[in-house]
Amino acid sequence: MLGGLTMLVAQVQEINKMLATLLEKGRSVPLPKSEVDDSSNVNSLKEELKALREKVEVELGENQMHVKVPSPKPFDGLRNSKAVENFIGDLDQYCQVAHVGDRDQVMVATMFLRGKAKIWRTHYEDDKESGHDSIAT
Image 1 (tube, helix red, strand yellow):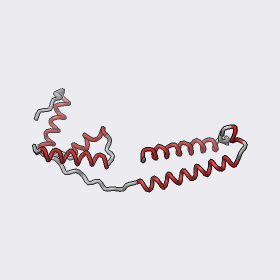
Image 2: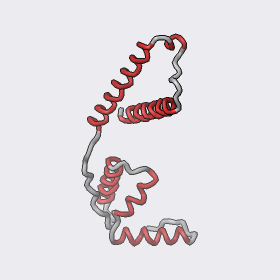
Image 3: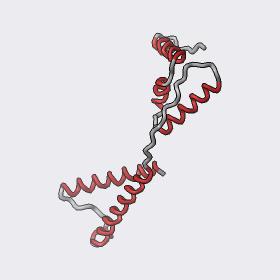
Image 4: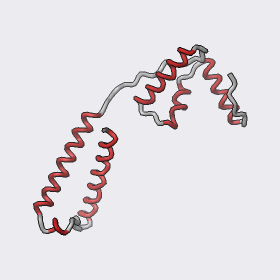
């Protein structure tokens, strides 16, 4: 629902920009021929737009979440399947709630590596830069 609402807000903002541009240039707002002579339709459209803006503002206000997202516990390279699963699960949840994009998730994950895991990642990056793109465990 929030995605559709965001799109609606963008459309309202675009309409507002177009109307402001037209009014600044002293032009009238073009309407279909059947509505040109009916000023009550223009007023009705203005009221409808105003109501729509208010609804969008209310919806946005109700849907905004201000949550402090706790950081996942660092992963130190312990070869324990439960520790790895917990780290990946916590990191996945963190990225979703913090709205971390797909492209940035690997970089965020490396921020939570410690000890042996951090050393491994550093060597992996060095190998990759030198043309040795392989993972050894």
